[in-house]
Length: 257
Image (cartoon, rainbow, N blue to C red; front, side):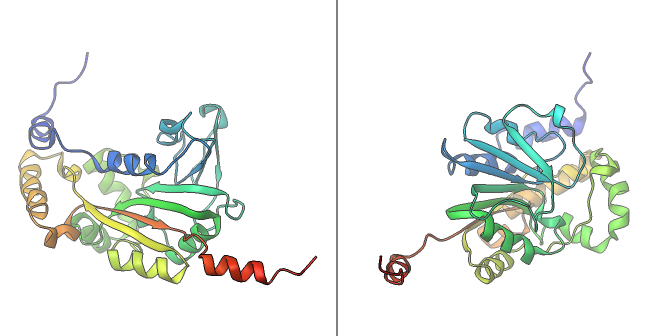
């Protein structure tokens, strides 16, 4: 027997029923960049790598890292994950075609290290696609104003998420300007930065607050001028292909046989 939908559930279905969730936008963006011979890498894949599982059979290799504990027996064949930090993945140079992360970059303490690591592990032409909260979303602003030690209790109350799955937030890479600066500093190109909206999940516990937050979300979608106020930011950074002049220069510098 299933629980009856709450008033907030019904409001969410009525207001946002046809909207595409940012998680799905991320997956579509990754899918359009992969090929059967590729290596796909998830930063922050979780204990059971739920999103990596969606790509089984679509690429040659599936790799993931996370800081949480996991059990190999919980993973299907074809997925390899290990404990590592986003700034020190342990992967070989230029071994990844596409990397991605979902709700991870806001927790990174050293964004420079992550971008430097992305530049190192990506093959030329490879991409790092990440979905992270926008710094100017009200939830992010509230989060920054509240000490990290209190976040687990608040998230458990508002979203029902386990406290052990809540991590400190730092917001070092959550604006368009930050993505461009970090990309430029580490030899990457900021291909695109888009702001996405979704239903106000933090207010599902109260229908009145949910309606008020929904009205605000719809307002931010009315014009691109307000786009940074939306809940999510989807960024794509790429590692440039070597220029033809660089190739020629390298070739000319080879010793004669």
